[in-house]
Structure formats: C-alpha cells, structure tokens
Length: 359
Ligand code: 1CP
Image (cartoon, rainbow, N blue to C red; front, side):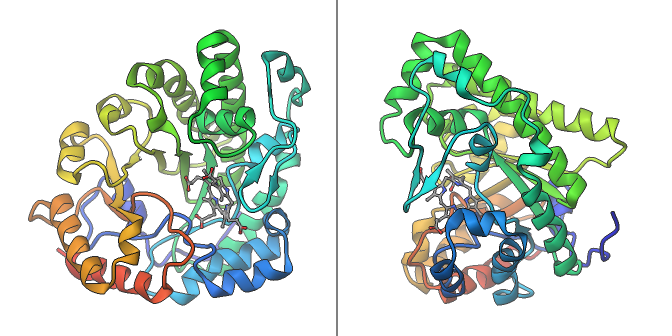
C-alpha cells in the first residue's frame, strides 16, 4: 500500500531511542469525550457504531489533529480494546462503561468463544478505518494502532465490565491457573493477528494497553501477564517478517507496574509507558538505555489550571531530560485524558511541552 510521505517523524525517532530536538507529544484517549466535536458526533451515533464505520472513526481520529495542528505528534486510531473480545464472539455494550451481558463465569464457558477466529474478517473494519485515516492524515503525523493486553482483556471478559477488586478474574488466576494461562495465550494470538493486520493497513506504531497491570503482585504479573505480552511482541515481529512487511516500533503501557520496569525491558517492546507514580529519572534508571519511555503527567493536573500545568510540565521535562537534549522520550499523560478537561488547557499542556522539552 502506498501513502503520502511522512512530514513529522519525531515520535518514530524517539521510539527508536534517538535524540530529538524536542519531545514528541500525544495523549492517550485524545479523541474522546472532553472534545465538543467528539460529543457532537457521539450524539448521533453509538460508540461501537463509530468504531465500525470507517468514515466516522476516521473523522473522530482526526479531530484532535485538526484542533491541535502543529502541536501534536501522533494520531491514534479511534477504536476500543474491547473489539478483541467481540472478535472472540462475546457481546459488549457501552452504557456508558463497558458491559458484557454474558461474561465468562467458569472455564467451561471458554467453549462458548469462537475457535479459530478469522481476525481479518471480524476486525477488518478497523483496518479500513486505519487505511482511510492514513490517507486523510496526508503525512502530517504518524498513525498509531493498538490493542488491549491479554491480562486486561481477560479481566473484562470475566468481570463483565469495570471492577475495583478484580475478584472474579483473580479467582480464575488462583483457582484455575492452567485454564487462565491457556485463555491468556488464546487472547494473545488474536492480538497478534490484529496488530499485524493494523500494520498492513497502515499503522506506523503499535501500542499494547495493559491498563490493569498494576493490579497484580509482581510475581503474579511475571507468571500470568508477562508471557502473553512477550508472545505478542515476538509474534507480531515474526509474522510481519514472514509477510515481508517492515517492522514498526511497539509500545507497552503496563499501567501501575512501576516496580517491574527492569523485567519489562526484555519483553520485546521498543517503548514502555509509565504512569505518574514513578519519577521519570527513577524509571530511566530501572530500564537503562534499552528502551524509550512514554509518559507521565498525572491526567488530573489538566484540571489544576494553567500555572499548575506549566510548573508540572517543566518539572517532568527536567526529570526526563536531566539537563540534556530529549532522548528516547515520548511525552504523554500517565493515563488517558478524562471528560471535563477544557480543550484549551490541553492546548496549553502541548505548548508547555514544546517550550520546556526543547534541546
Ligand atoms: O461513550 C463513549 O464515547 C465512551 C468513551 C470511550 C472512548 C472515547 C470508550 C469507552 N472508549 C473510547 C475510545 C478508546 N478506548 C480509545 C481511542 C483512541 C484514543 O483517542 O486514545 C482507546 C485507545 C481506548 C482504549 C481503552 N478502552 C482502554 C485502555 C486505555 C485506558 O484508558 O486504560 C480501556 C481500559 C478501555 C475500556 C473502556 N472503553 C471505554 C471506557 C469508558 C473504558 C474504561 C472503563 C473502565 O475504567 O474499566
């Protein structure tokens, strides 16, 4: 497939570990409910309807790129991590949070999942949205594809939605460890095909969201979550190579797993995302020079007013740069932006990053 030439490769250079003239910046959930233009589209269309309609997904993906032209260094395709459980045959509603009417209760329910999922058929609408968006971006910034990590998806498939305690899915881990590992691997295999398909369709960087990584004890993370994360990284690289498609950088966002950064360095990812609960300089010490880092402003600072945003962005830049030119750092929040943030305060965040991260 051929696309317009890329005019801004800052994020790709940082992901490869290079020094950059300033830190590239984007924010997780940048297309979403804090934007009035998103809410306007959402008023007329269901959440998954937008995901499944390439024209609409493209439109919503482009909204933050248009609003913050020249300030933002990547687009992320509008979709959700829960399209993978859908591809496995599960029903997922969004009202307003995720709800599975028929979650997995015991390992016997694994039988209900689709065997030999044809990922390209089930999720071809995401590929189509990526290809259309990549053309519409006209090379302004790279386009990120993504999926959820097996452990995070496993939690939704068993809990049936969001959870504070992770009681049901942890019951599975501790009571049915072998069945749990088999299911995690099965989810990983769908993720591999899905990510490979996204790259073939035009994604220039991939991110795996392990939003609930920090809910596991370190040794349980190593036992249950890490193997399927490695399986994804190696599987994607192998399948792309076999298809003669150039590899793209891969980011892992293991939210909350800050005590395990050192063991994540060898998981096969180019970039590791960190939340705000670890100091950037400490994170760098943990990972050494082997990977790039992404993060890590507390998203709630966007409610703190312009002075607080400026002060904290300046501090974050100092902690990531250590007085040098930015290197191997992609600036982001430490988790997704939330509804109610003033879009102009997010503009101020971008402006501060441009100012204080410059070499
Ligand atoms: O009604 C609406 O419009 C729903 C709001 C919404 C949006 C805008 C949801 C429901 N998903 C999304 C889009 C989305 N989700 C993107 C789009 C690209 C972007 O701009 O970033 C991405 C990357 C996601 C990923 C996602 N979905 C994650 C991982 C990232 C994270 O924030 O931790 C998770 C955990 C989900 C599940 C999900 N989908 C939606 C909600 C409200 C949730 C989280 C619910 C929970 O806390 O359990």
